[in-house]
Length: 89
Image (cartoon, rainbow, N blue to C red; front, side):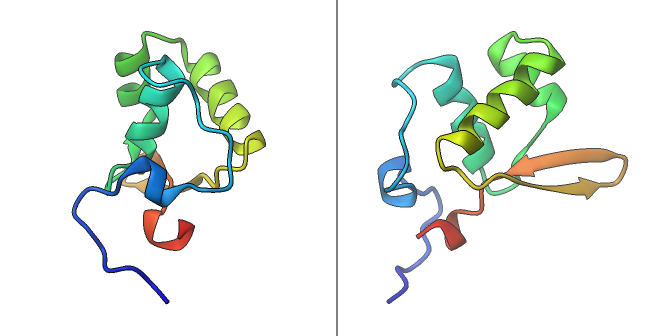
């Protein structure tokens, strides 16, 4: 049975069978950006973490390795990455 959608999903409710990053870490910050309804572009993720582009991409690969399903879509000329909270439950 599907849960009713909330405006801001709780990280613990959305992702249950994966290894979560340490709270308050940069990887946790990246994960929270990806869980936003609109996702996040590379520039947003770089600004939030202070990382270079290759580090952001490698960290998304690490999250995929932990079991997170990260998708991407084009928003004009910008690629946006996201975790679809509705499908993760």
